[in-house]
Image (cartoon, rainbow, N blue to C red):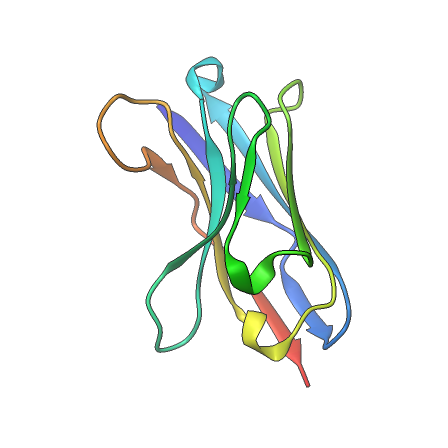
Length: 118
């Protein structure tokens, strides 16, 4: 089992930046891919970005060019650098990890709230 704890959310003005962190604990040696999801008020949860154990990355179209996902395996920490934030980026951001063989993500964090004011 892997436990995930996000931090770094908050209130920021449009055009500003935030960096989210996700600290993993437990059987971290088994983690393959990690990622970030977000859920805006009244909307479905959506994938923001993910990064594989080999460092390959994928971004959702709305954040491409503005967000950067990275991971520090030595620190068991995942990051999401968010630049040029827009009010539509307002959401609760969740960290996820994949380490099992079944489809889907195996662990979810509790979420950290990001609010972008106009």
